[in-house]
Length: 147
Image 1 (tube, rainbow, N blue to C red):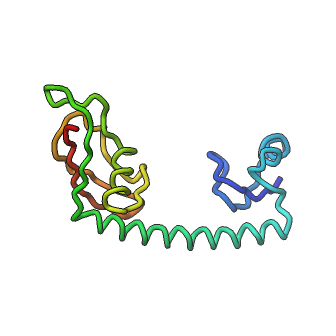
Image 2 (cartoon, rainbow, N blue to C red; image 1 turned 60 degrees about the vertical axis):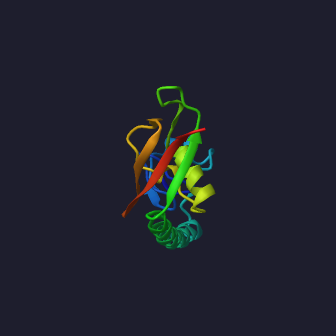
């Protein structure tokens, strides 16, 4: 059965694609959960229109994110947290905290998945944070200080 996907479905296809799936999968899972609609001519045309619009939106978002990452290159973000007497943090500083601090201090809306740190920081100090999102790469400095 041909269906037009409404969302990205792992192993099936991306949103707004017209795909051929087994009848049972379409009738018992995709259509009842509103992950897909039957591929009528109108649905196919609407899917193609949405796919073009989504691609244009992604390009605009990528350009905006590239500009935000470039503006972060000179920024110095300070995160204050509680530390023990040895300088170890009670709670690690990870991607969510870094993205929130970038939004608060540098006024840059940075998605959490763009912060490309290997592990959360568990000690006070100055760290270089790599940022990557698609084909856009950059880095900025954060300082983790004792509260």
